[in-house]
Image (cartoon, rainbow, N blue to C red; front, top):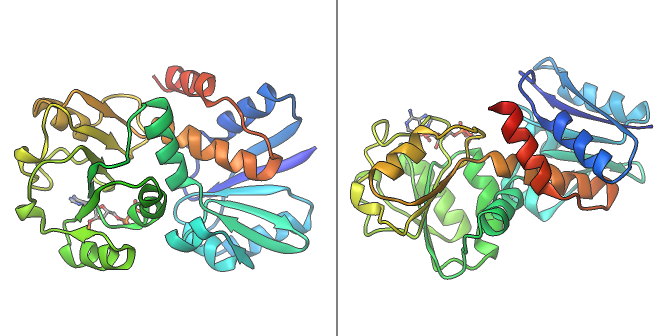
Length: 267
Ligand code: ATR
């Protein structure tokens, strides 16, 4: 039986085993997929041992995504842009690294939610690893403009320059946006960061990358300003898993029933 693991520290709350087992069942594949908490100083050794013993594939979550990227012999364009990887596979004796987070988010936004990115003005709040992971996939969907704001402005400027988008100071954001993506690790509710109320209109679609079933503070904040469409990042979790699944099995599972099950289980 093909063996898979998700590695992290901590890893207790990972939903990846549940998601991947459901995908496999859906497609009639026999796999084992478990989670492993890896000691902070043992990541590289753990990965090498896993593949040496015949393991088939790994998902990698915090805090190891950058290490996974650095360890790889071959990196996909998505991992290269993110400088981080969430999916590893051994092919012809070489470790291949991929990053499905950004494409997973885009898939969730455009397919499950039916929101269009093309021609839209998009604000991203945050400038950490999560933003680095979503910029390239987002830009490939042809938005009109992407603006990054962040508590630490210099980080937003640096990232914006690297990806050819705009950075604005958080207290001087200009105009309103078609879409706002919260990519900060804080449970942003507009009070942590002073986001101007004028950036949200009734048409603004608000996406919080936090994997949460319940309304997030950012979603509640957007709603209080009159936004009508908002979502947490739970769907992104399922979509990035489906893209990893495809890398290993060359098959695309139906994500909708798995999304519904996960949402019910976490409720
Ligand atoms: P990740 O990989 O999840 O992006 P990260 O690289 O640590 O994690 O980045 C966290 C992001 O959340 C950063 O944009 C951070 O802002 P700074 O660059 O100023 O640190 C943002 N963030 C974290 N806590 C925050 C808070 N209380 N208020 C505002 N922004 C916050």
